[in-house]
Image (cartoon, rainbow, N blue to C red; front, side):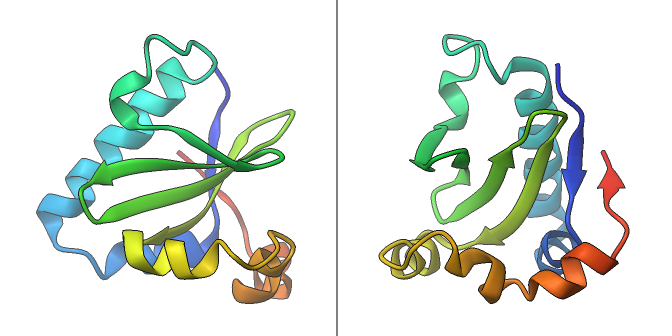
Length: 113
């Protein structure tokens, strides 16, 4: 079981969702923390590899969470609608860091979930 880290931009984005959606996000994070790396256990999350060590999980019909599987932890980077993720995907994944303003991410404290 790897610890979860939540980037500042991820936390900021999650705060805009209603309480019921935030509960679903929390439940998905807990399930991922317990089951990631055990493919049959996490089938309900709809985990999909985007590229390299970047993945997405489906929280509900129109909400996806983007995370990076790192050696020491799982870092959540982005929470967004399915459509926004689909517009984002054609770009190279390196653009993810530009999109998120990587300097803020590097200078901010990561929250361990």
